Length: 352
Image (cartoon, rainbow, N blue to C red; front, side, top):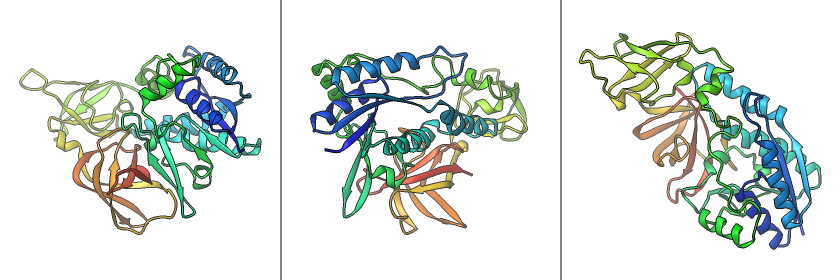
């Protein structure tokens, strides 16, 4: 039977994934991937590693580990900080999956004897007619295909997502039934390397942020903010606005100028919306589709899918929305089949 290297994070999803693969007859090897965490945040990786080891012991599978902290800092964290400094909001989870889990880890696993790799993501891989497709996870609340849309084709073809066809409640129940040592462990929240501090406090440690003016649509100063790089399009809190009426109505961030350290706001949410966006650094799963075509797209993780026309734009690709959308430069726009909404065709980074 094939050898599968399973990324064991210490959480219940990857633990159940390993258990399912073993029950299906695979030769399973559990692997803990160590990533970077800053010195000023309470270290959690040792606890995660211990839980991963306990799972491997309970399942009686070999346990290995790989330190990818330097690669993570260089390819994920540094990219994130550089983008925030420019007023762009990146998605580090997309980068982590592309360059760490399905990049450096996959390369190491295959070189170490793995035939396949597996993780505890809620997504599905479907093969047929010599092609490999990425599908949404069955549990729509937990679906993580958005984060996985940049996996290289040659790696996706050798990847298994064992719990992609399950509901989260059933995964948790199976972990209890199998008496896995981490069956009751809470799900992780937010960015794994940020820990318990806010993203704003984390960014302040690495990039220069100074208070600056909040301006309205006419360019008039109406308030103050904590640093332009800390905000994102559509945000409606974290800054102060003074109005002639005294009371402050809800305002939305519609533009960020990190160089000038200004944040433009409007009382009207639609001022933050765009009719279309250019997609940079686009990645297609399988053959690039013939443009133009109609698609279902997500403009941020777990945003409601919306209709868009995907077409050529100069040397790149543009998504034209059926209805204006609030989008943030640097976030990923992920493209799905317009009929089923299930198959992921790829995606790109939102630019203006």
